Every structure is written in structure tokens, then in C-alpha cells.
Image 1 (cartoon, rainbow, N blue to C red):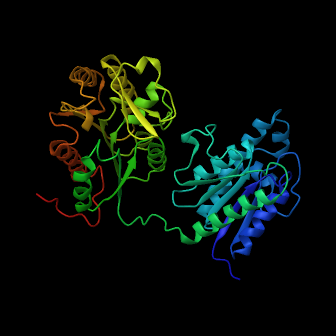
Image 2 (image 1 turned 90 degrees about the vertical axis):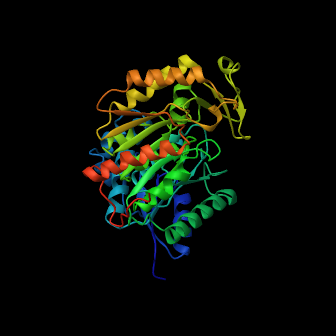
Image 3 (image 1 turned 45 degrees about the vertical axis):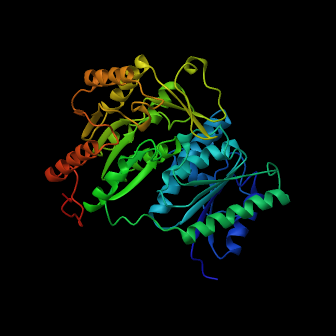
Length: 420
């Protein structure tokens, strides 16, 4: 049978040769092809592989001898991770692979996460791991579209449980490679952050207006993983411009909540030179995982149980000044045009009069601090509108239109005149 998909298979073929051979067999039984990459250090692959460990170490600018002499397994595997990532990226760029699947415990998973991160969004990535979905894996290590399968009962040798997990992984990666529709790329993409439409609703006004201008709009749910995906794509230059209007993950990071997107949040678009319009949607709220106890210092604040997965508390005035400085510090490092909109009328639906998070003194403190700390080259614009009002959307669109007019953002080929 002619192959219509080629899968990169990554693992330590010295100690897990039986499992990896079974995985390859399952891939090939479905009519796909496999390219096997051995990331072992001390032993030799027990079965033939297309990319041996010496090639992997060489791709990292090192050698197996240097990896073996590194003194500990972690240092050695980081060498192999650098090489495996470089080769994974090159294989995809050369059109030799359509997807990847990797197998490992904590060491193998650590390496596989790096390989997945270098492949573009839309390329299927499956990791069979003993720590799948574990809190050991921080959000910012995950590729935006990664899939994970728990390697249950498979730590040492094949058994029926292990075969079940491996066969599912093979089916997942082959099926995804055949079915995946990569991003079309026919229209420039505006990346936007938001939360559920009950709290932030500006996207309802902005999305059709941006599409009228010829852009595609991708809206990311800023609940940790969404912001991580947004940052990953921005880091790779995947957006023509961004409207980063939901900064709850920044507040969560400042507060120490697990519902965050890592230290790179609000840095990637600026680091890549992508024009960015930023606003402080929901930065007054702190999100906690539903299973977490609210820390004692937040117990006297307004509280909202959103559902069984997430619950919210709120910052006080002093903390809101801190979050303003936290945001300004990140934006100061931007290499591209950056415009911050301050909606003095409110920054989320629950901060309106009569709602549980209404805190005019806290909002005033935040606005005052923003005016103090937002410095050039960041441009600050203020509106009396609430972030969910038409006035806010109009201001955001006027900034973008100015960038299109002066060439900062390239006009889409299908650009239409904005509706009056």
C-alpha cells in the first residue's frame, strides 16, 4: 500500500525497542510510513532506525561521547533534546514528515515536548507519556495543539494495557495526519484574546468589522492554555497584528495562580515585532482552579464560582497598581509598535455598578497607575467607554486602520472599505 502520511517516531530505542517497534508496526499497518529517531545515549538501538543517536547529538553541535560524559542523565538528555528538536524542525521544513509521535517517561517526555514545540500549529503531535496531563508539565511547555496519551502500565515491557495505549496513539497520529487541514494562510490573521462572552464581549463587535477589512480573526480563551497557544503562535510570527484585550492570565501570574500562561505572557508578540494593541480586560480578577482553596489573603474579597473548574476572586486597589506595573514592564520590551488602550469606564462586565466586582476605587487606582507607568515607545490612549462598549471597539479599530494606512500593518488583499 502506498503511504499517504509519514510519521516521525521519537524515543530511546535502546531501552524501549519493543514498545517503539510495536508503535511503528501499528503505524505501518494503517498504511502510513514511519521515520524513527533514536534519542538514546548509552545504549544502541535494538532495531534499525532512520536517524541514529549520533546524528541527533551532532544536530545539537555535540556528540554522543560528550553527552555520555556530561555527568548526569538530565544534562545528557538536554543535549539530545536540542538535537532532536533541530532535526524535527528540519524534517518538517523539508516536507519529509506530516506528524510526530513520541514515547517516554519523564526524560522522554521532557525531550518530546521540545520537539513538539518546534513544529508549526496544525502539524499533529502525539506524546505517549507516563506523566500525561500531570501537573509536572507547565502550560508553557506545551505546543498549542498537542495531544497526550497516558502510557498506563507500560513502564517496562509490553503488555495488553501498553499495547492499547500505543495502538490508540498510532491511530490518533495517523488519523490526524490524514485529516488535518493546515491553516489556510490566504488571509492575514488578527490574534485576539478574550474570555467567555458573558464577561468580555468586545469580540462580537470587532470580529465582523475586522473580517470586513479582509482579516481572519482567531480568538483565544485566556484561561491559561489559550494564552499559551496565543503566545506560541505570536512567537512564530503567525499574526499580522494582535488585539490582546484579556489580561487575566497576567493577573493570575502575578497572584501565583496556576491558571496562567507562563512567564512569556505578553512578551511574544512584542518580541517578534508584531504590532499589538493591548487593553486590560479582566485584570481585576484572579482565577483559581476549582479544586484549589482560595488563599487566606483573598478570602475577604468578592468571590464568583464560575463553574466546577474555575472560580474568581478580585484584587484590591494596591494590588491593581502592582498589576499595572507588571503589564508596563512587559510591554516596555516590545520591538514592534505597541498601543495600550485604557477603558476608564470599566474592564469587564462584572465591574459595572450593581455587579459583584464593582470597585470604583480599585479601578481608579489602576487607571492612575497606568497613566504613570506607560511610557514611550508604548502609546497610551484613554477612553471613557467600558471595554464592552462600542466606543472601545471604535478606538481599537481606528488604531488598526491608522497602522494599515501608514503601512505598519499590510492591507489584506481582499481589503474592503470599513462599514460606516
